[in-house]
Image (cartoon, rainbow, N blue to C red; front, side, top):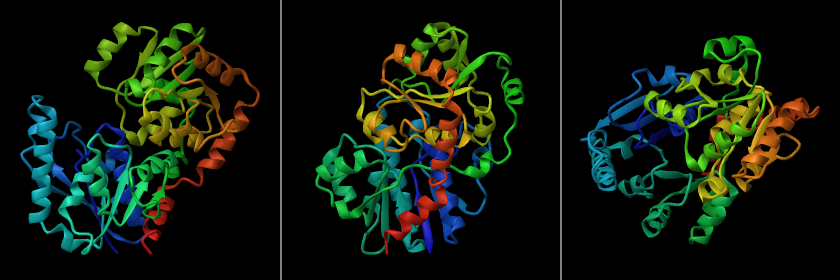
Length: 369
């Protein structure tokens, strides 16, 4: 089968969606399909080969289509510029005759659905949240052969908008377990990242963002004794500001995704502090870090939210009240001292074995039958 994954994303990117896009392309290809990732030609801020950056097998091709890429050169009227760049990409998709090259066309950007006919191709759209332009959003999704929702909460809200429940499948994110076969020891991981060797470390990996709950984590850092909070993510300019506001936190900066397993090895506890103040966090998200944390066999501290409870239970993780730094402090201290921590981490690892990219890709394509 010819699968064309069409994304309006910048590849490679420091954001998590790049990991997911590349991993899914690799998974479709590993199942024996002819796969090509089609993206616009945008300014690349990470000067590296995307396959090397993400640690993904080079079993598919990447094709870039030229667009004006106004968004990389101007911050004026960002919404208008985003739509202009999107329209340019849609027009180039039409001129490139992508529809004639693929049996299945796979998307994450709903406007791209309008460029293709559901009578000619099987169209799959993967949805990660509900967009503000609801009428346009719903009209686009009605064109799809299948809609992939990453959580049950998201599926429920899509159905509430009038979409056919029979066309929606729920497929949480996943992890490449092969990245965790050979992991460095804790001391070596800390030495490479220049972290204190003899201190307890609670590690967060990801972007610094309000809905991701990092404000709560930083407040907890002020309450913790003998525990060092470490955050991996964000660029040098952002980190210089963050260090001034949160001197008690160690900020490491961006690291290539292929290092994820070795970076996590530096931790005594891994923290996923998502906020409960926004629906995208409370009910829609399926964080990639959740699955890499589970694969690490290191104790996990996580916000008590419906999106997290779809994957984890008290048998595998330590939960705390979202947006409550005092309760997060308690949960981190408990995870470091509780005798059940190792057993919970082991059960989390056993559970994550069912969340592979290949398994996810197979489930999605099987739904077309």
